[in-house]
Length: 392
Length: 98
Image (cartoon, rainbow over all chains, first blue to last red):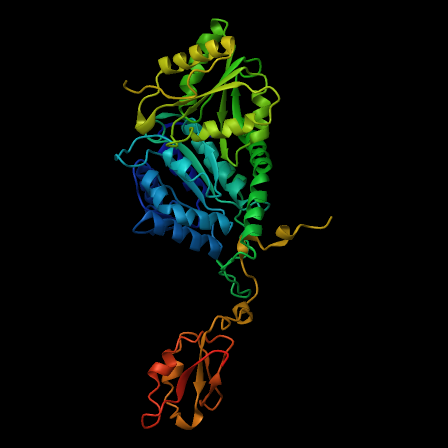
C-alpha cells in the first residue's frame, strides 16, 4: 500500500516520472506544464533520478531530442501544453510514424489567439491525428495512475506507439487533491526494464532511421500504422487489469457512470465529468434515468465499445471542451461515428463548453439534462451544436 | 496464415541493412552529362572536391578516373570549377542521350 498525499496534478505527474526514472527527458517549460517539469528538474538536480535532462530552446527541439534519444534506445519522457504541443506538431508525427514509445503528460490548455493560459482541450484535439495514443484524466489521481500505465502501454512490444496523458490545465494541474501514491518499488516493478527495439546505439548492428518513402510504399506504411492502433485497446485493458491487481483502482477504455439503465446520457471528458456525476446523482434522486460516459482513451477511439455502451439510450449530449470551427466538436464527431453502427440511432446534441478555462458549472449540466429529457420525450432536436456558458 | 504486404514492413520504417543507399541509384534523372577529357586533366582534384555526390571516382594511386554515372545528377559544378590545362577544360557538359 502506497502513501496518501495532498498534491497538485502536476506534482503527482512529476512524482510518477521520478518513480519511473526515464533515461532521457527533453523539455521546454510552458504554462501550465511548467510546474511539472520544474519539479522533475528538481529531482534531477537533487540526484533523486539519474535522468539525462536536456534543456532545449523550444518544444520543437524538445520533441526532436526525445525522438533522437528514443531512437538511440532510451526510455524517454517530456511534458507540454498548448502552443508547446502545437510547436511540436511535425515532430509528433515523426515520433509516431517511427514507432518510438515516448511518453508525454499533456496539461491541456487553450490555443491562441487570443492568448489564454487556461484549461481546455484545443491542444490535445489538434494533435489527435498525429498517431499518438491519447488518454484523458479526470483528476490528479487518474493523471498519476494513467502516467504510470502509459509507459507500459507505449512500450508494449506489440504496439510501440508514443502516448500522451492529458489532464485539464489549472483545474487539475494546479489544484491540490488527495492522491494515493504507489510504492516506488511497485512502480519500478510495474513499468519494468526498458527494452529497446533497434537502438541506434547498438553499434554492432548499423541501421538508418527516417528513410524517404515515396508513393510506392507510403500508403502501406500508413495502413500498417492504423493496424497498430487497432491493437492498442487490448494493450490498454491488459495493462489496466494488472494495474488494478496492484492498486485496486479499475480503469477501462471509458468510464460508465449510472449508464446501464439510462435513457439519456451525457458524454464528457476529463474534470467536467466529476461535476456532471454530481448533477446526475441529483437527477437520479428525482427519478430521471440519466447516465454518463467519460472517454478515457480518445486515440485510438474505441468506436464499437462506445456504441455498445450507448445502444440503449434515446438521447445523447456530447460536451466538448474544444471546438472545430465550421464543424462539430471533436468528441461529438467521434460519438456520431460510433453511433453510425447502431440500428436505432439516438438523438444527439453537441455543446461546446468551458473554453479558455471558463468554469463548467452545475447549472450547465442541469440545463443539458433538462434539454435531453425534452428531446427524449419529443424526439425533436432544435439545435445540434450550441455554446453553453457563453454571454448572449 | 500468409501475411498481407503491409504487415511485413519493418516497424517504424527503420532500415536494418547497413550501406543500403548504395543500391539506390540517383543518376537517372540527369539531363546534362559531364564528359571527362583526360588529356586536359591536370589531376587538381577540384572536381572531386566540389562534387556534391561523390560521383568523381579516384583510384588507389590517387588519380582521377571517369565519372560514376549511377549517382551523377548532371549539376555541372565540376565543369564550372575545372581549371583545365592552359584554358582547355577537362570537363564539359553534354546533353544526356546525345
